[in-house]
Amino acid sequence: MSENTATKIPYSEQKLIKAEKILLSTLKTPFETFYVPIKLECGSEEKIWTISFNTESKNTPMVLIHGFAAGSCFWLLNFDALAKDRPVYALDIIGFGHSSRPEFDENRREAEKQIVLSIEEWRKQMKLEKFVLIGHSMGGYISTAYSIDYPERVLHLVLCDPWGFSDRKSYPTPRIKALCFLYSKISPLTFIRALGRLGPWWIKTTCDDIVDNYNKVLNDQSVMSNYIYHCNAQNPTGEKAFTTMVKKIGRARRPMIKRVNNLKPDMPITIMYGTNTWMDKSMGPRIKELRPDNTDLRFIENAGHHIYSEQSELFNEIVINVCDTVDKLVSTQAG
Image 1: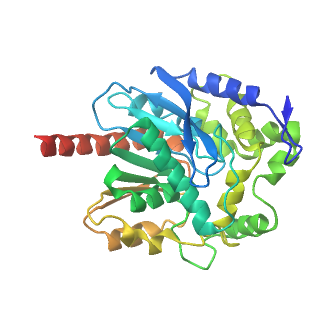
Image 2 (image 1 turned 30 degrees about the horizontal axis):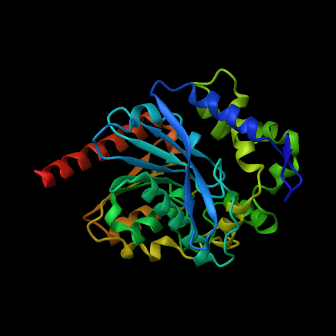
């Protein structure tokens, strides 16, 4: 057991590795896990944890970007289906999960830029030319920012219940009002770290809407809560970077709805919102209004914020159809 020197909260890399191995052992598709070395603009050398599948396939690759306080294994219920006919890459955003924890700039624009640049450096190291980019929650925000800066790389942008688009100044629900007030007083994951060894228990008890989605493939229900805990018990540099991007009301300081028009005009976007999400799903119709010819908007019944695990089969079907369409377009252009 090692100890996080920044927070004095116990964190075990071995337990994170063990939990991840158990999670990935449920898959039928062969995979590889590895670090991808990158160098940031500031000169610091970092590493991005990556899971890859079916890399020999010639079909359009897919890149998965997880949300806040998460890691690549949150896509566990999607990997087998999505990787059946194409290369799939899931990465842990720097500052999160199994990736290294650099100190980010305290300026919101620079912090966002550092994360986006890290993904571009990762892409270069992986030698990926073009791909379908899929982001959940905060990952949707980052994926959109990446697509604005590197439009030549993204063949289709898929946003799964994305955070950071809303420019509304009111709270959509009392629950969000309470959460935003709490988060304005204390860093979101500080409480989990403060619990120490009780952290996994607390996650299992209070985040059952996330953890229980994986029970269908896990014999031990504590595995996912252990994974989540050890992803977040480390030096919280990614969390701090996220905090610089967030207003006290839980909105992005630079709302993506005001930047959507900076996307390449003909870049196709698929947006999914759970009908029971706590995100501001009114942003979906607004995006479609701004980009009517290239936006496919879906509202997923019986799903909240974590569509990919709550309604995994439907999510997989939608994404596979997107990728098949991209494959046909690429084939037509090549022919």
